[in-house]
Length: 400
Image (tube, rainbow, N blue to C red):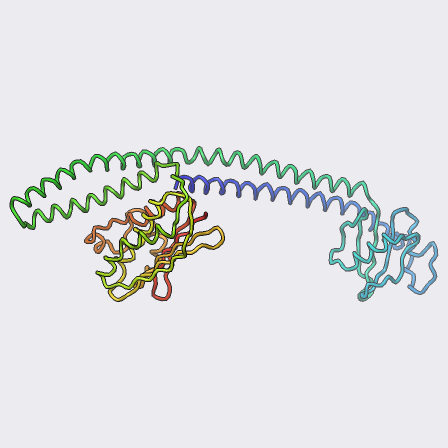
């Protein structure tokens, strides 16, 4: 739980600050791009407007080119084209190379009116109905400066994100540390209190048994014995949770998971039969898993016990175990009343019970599923619940 909280805080900080940095980079590079393109196209605009400044009228397309023709540009590195809607060049300025001609045809298919291609900055404008007039101006230095600026901004942004990553980890650790300390103290208190409760409970149970033998059947003694059993179960569950939470290592041994699941199911067969419930098992053979076999048995026992409690007579419990690639899927599903959708996200919380009165009578305290979740979490697995077609399914996924 603490790890999840730490990761959540880390990702909130990381994503938030990274978005800010990326936003600043985008704004900066966009400004640099616009500034470079605009300063060059202003010169192109002055070239296009020089005939109007001299008071001259544009020549007709059919007229012979001469030095007064606006398509005659006596500036090195500046070229003009007129291209129709079929991407055919109608006319062009002098000394045009094939490279520039290909650039012009490429630009004619673009929707942008200005920009750069290769080492040329271009500007387009509509002439006539569907034709485009394209002016290209070679400005290698400006384009190289723009590219350098963009690369520099990307590098700075990447370094910024790396720095944020380091800072976010530190901040997340600092923020979570008080919560972690409180949680550790709470776990230690539960563990200590549970251990301390075991001795008086054992004394009470022993004395109740002695009284029962001397007095005979007595409802008051039965009440004491029932409550002691109930308290013993609660204490054992609390100790289990404390043990799982305080254990950082896993007893890793390779074992036959299929066999262990079959053995765990066999323990409940008599109870299932007594409750007049149908049992169906679909367990793929020889599935191997590396971990603690007692943990797998415990998980299956919790899920089967939960299924039995929520399955009516003549209904069915199905246990499925299969492996696909490196993922082992264990499913325990029971036919019965479905868990309300709004409750499904809460049933793995400690001490949470849907029907509190019923669970109290059955000595259930809402710790079974949280224990199963903790055990599955030891192996970086997942456990989820699904309700459909009259079945409630608990699905455990483990990576081998």
